[in-house]
Each structure stands twice: as C-alpha cells, then as structure tokens.
Amino acid sequence: MKSDVFFANNREHHHYNIYEKVKRLLNEIGLNGIVKKNDIVAVKIHFGEYGNTSFIRPSIVRIVIDEIKALGGKPFLTDSSTLYKGTRSDAVSHLNTALLNGFDFSVVNAPLIISDGVKGNSAVKIKVSGKNIEFADICSDVFYADALVVLTHFKLHELTGFGGSLKNVAMGCAAKSGKLIMHSSVSPVINGSRCVKCMECKKICPGGAMIVKEKCLMINPEKCLGCAQCVSICPVSAINIVWNSASNDAQEKMCEFAKAALSNKKNKNCYLNFLYDISPECDCYSHNDAPVVRDIGILASTDIIAIDKASIDLVNSEQGQINSALRKNFESGGDKAKGVHPDLDWTTQINYGFQIGLGNREYNLITINHKTKNKN
Image (cartoon, rainbow, N blue to C red):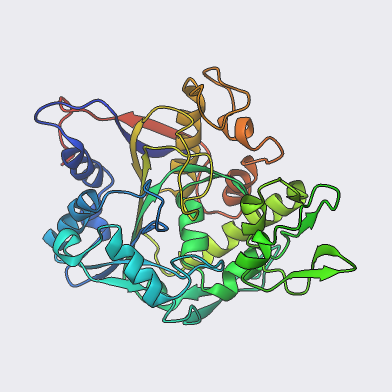
C-alpha cells in the first residue's frame, strides 16, 4: 500500500503563507494523534553550522512548537554533537552556535537540549541485529522522549547522495560512537602527486590521522574517523574516497540506526522536509553553496522512506540551476544528486530502508493549497 505524502508548493497567497502551510501539513498528517497531553516531544532539527545559513528558520520552527503545545505536549528542540571539529562538536559549543543562528527561547518558545550529553557519549544501546550492525548507540534524550517530530532541510550530500529525514534521524539521533560506526567504511586516500603539503587537512582532522612520513602526507587508517572533512577542505582536491562501497555501507548502516532510533516510537513520529535552498552538500560545512534547483515547497508524512523518495523525485523533476555545483543532468527528470555526486547511488537508502521495514518506496503525493479544506 502506498503511503501518503502531503505537499505544499512554494506558491503563496495573502491568507496562506508559510506558517499556515506548516499548520495545515501538521493537521493533514494527524499531529493530534501523534502528540498526546503531557507527552515529552523531541523536535529533531539541524541548528546549522556557524556560517551556514540554509537551516530551517527559527520563526518557522516556532509554529511547530506552538502546535505541539496546543495539543498539551511538552516539546524541546534537539540535535547531537558532531564527529568533526566544527562549532557543534560538544554541547556547549553546539548550544552557543544554535543561539547565534537565532534559536533563542524567546523565538522558538522551547528549550534546546543536545540529546547525547555534554561530550556526545550519553546514549542507549539498542539491539538491532541487522546486516551491518548488532547494536546502535542512540542519543538518550531522543530515545526516552515520548514522541519525535523531525524537521529536515533537504539537500544533496557528498556521502549519501542526498540528506533527508532518514539521515536526520540516523546521524542526528546517534551518539558519537554511533556516528563513528556509520562512517567506519569511509577511508580517504591522498594523491601524493597532487598534494602540496599545505597541512590544512592536518589542522582540522578530529582524529589526528594525518601524519608526515618520509616527506609524504599520509592518513593513518587506525585513527581516521571517516568524517571526510579533509576531502572538502583540500584546496587542490588531492584527497579522495572510493565512494561506491563506502556510500552504500554508510547508507545501509543509516537505515539500521534509524530503525533503532524509532524502535520505541511506533505511531509517535512524523516528518517535514523543507525543499528550500537545496544545496549540493551537507549543512555541516561552514558555508552553503548556491542551490541546485529552485525552491520547491514543504512535504509532510508519517513515513520516513516515502517522504525522502518524494523529495528527491521533486528535486529531480526540476530544471537545474546553471550557476550551481551541478555538472550534468540539468534537464527536468535528470538525477540532480548524480549531477553533483556522480559516483554515489542514493537509491541504496530508499531500497534498504524499505527492505528492513522502515517505510514504503511508493507514495501518494497529495498537494494542498489555500482552497483545500482542512482534514477533520
């Protein structure tokens, strides 16, 4: 059976702005059946790396918070610490970054909690017995919440092809030890003939894996965390990853981690994907490149696989932006993820997620607008 995915496009009306769209979408997916009185509700968000501005606007997040409170829920905004050295690698730095990006209590009307503790090691070990992992370390505060509402800025991604709700739950609800497991097959290599030994990668490597041996810069695989930050920062593109196997492995592990994170949230989770500022790479960088397609709109569903499949289908249906990171597939129907990351197969996360029972690949896309009546 197909899953319902509700869609509000980018067009607006003087009685139908983005705040009204969010309210309507939450109504359509049945938020009142997901959130009950006195439920503690984790609202999963990406607060944005400092310097990156493609995160969901705090004033929009406030609408979701207010709708949860209207149902008697007790919401908190949350994310987890990062593996790499950035502005969100521990709870204190992360919260300071969130405040700098506008997620103040006076704006969002909810407390901010970094769900894996001060240093990223507060976790619950969940038995998965999956193809790739036996146990998954899930952030304590997310796991023990009564319900989970996931707000995702949809974008393309250098490891998984695209990043949607699935990645937001899997990576964002995993403690640092879990993130390390998901990245464990990502092993960069340095092209010695191209390397200029500027040491920029050595400065930012969180695992201290960069070593100089016989006048050559090398990566110690035993210390490499697999965060791939060195790949993006190298000014001469001398660091690369054999992405085919690494990406597929990471995507499968993501699905298993997402299943663990949702294991105690049956009928208590929902997802909104925001298809605005659709950047070519992860929001974890301290910048966001030009969008690869125009702004499209917002999707909502209770099916984590269906909403991501609908999102990438909508992105691919668009005409690509000429002045962007796209190298090919500019035409409507062209695979935009492969147009930026040609060696990655994003279908792995959709197909494997479906295979292990996370959701459906087939969906009914239901467009709502200011003329559509509210669902009773």
